[in-house]
Image (cartoon, rainbow, N blue to C red; front, top):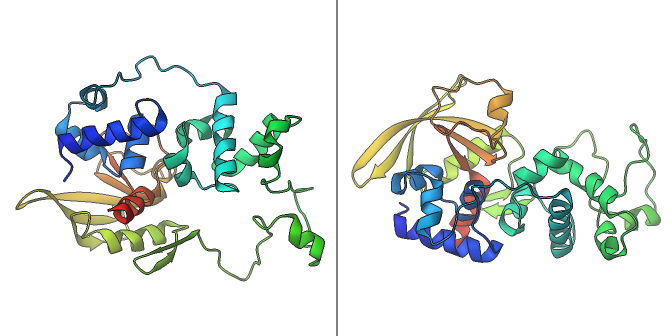
Amino acid sequence: MSNKRHIIDSIARIASQLGRAPSRSEFIARSGISAYFILRCFRGWNDAVRAAGFSPNTLNVRVEDQALLEDWGKQVRRNRGIHPRHTHLRQGKYDASTIERRFGPWSKLPEAFRKFAKGKREWSDVLALLPVPKPNKNPERKPYSASSASSNTKQRLPLGDRPAYGNPIDFHGLRHEPVNEQGVVLLFGMVAKQLGFLVEAVQKGFPDCEAKRQIAPERWQRVNIEFEFESRNFRDHRHPLHGCDIIVCWRHNWDECPKHIEVLELSSVVKSLRNS
């Protein structure tokens, strides 16, 4: 259970990493503390920021495109290759959702950065780490050669008869990150007890899961859970906004998620459990 002191200390720690007070979504992603526990201790996110000794960002100043792309490029340089979205949530200066709203899906960022950095020598090392753009929309598979093997190993045309895996994770016997909703269901079942949940039932219809969550010593409460690979899939699937208490997902990328629905991002949970 996260108490007020722990939340304040976590805000201070993350602020020292960012050089500024974190946004609510940045704090949840980096700390693993859910919005549910923040609101149990404070009237709102700005009150929590003030309690930690910082001024909340109430001006909503627009960050320039250049600053967002430079932040992304610096993390590519740091990681020696294109980094996944959840890594940027931990390492980047700006929120990954802000970058996606400006330039499209995470997979499109190499193309946006390539246009931004064209002709700029200071970014030549980062450009060398990006995948080579595809020459046409329907490329044919080329025979293997030594030159093609050395050009770029981060992006290959997939073999149609074999499954694709997420990044290596090696967490509690799960070898790879989830790549779909079924993987999210499996991972949640592995960590539900550690997170204070008791699963009562899982079904095909909405909502996917009925569970009880411990809210205080010797006290439990019933919650309805919907599983999604990405939180914004809840919107894309046109689920009703009432009848679900928690979205359990691998990646949280829905900034407009209604405030009454809590989002549990498992990529942040895994990191938090590893660190603890």
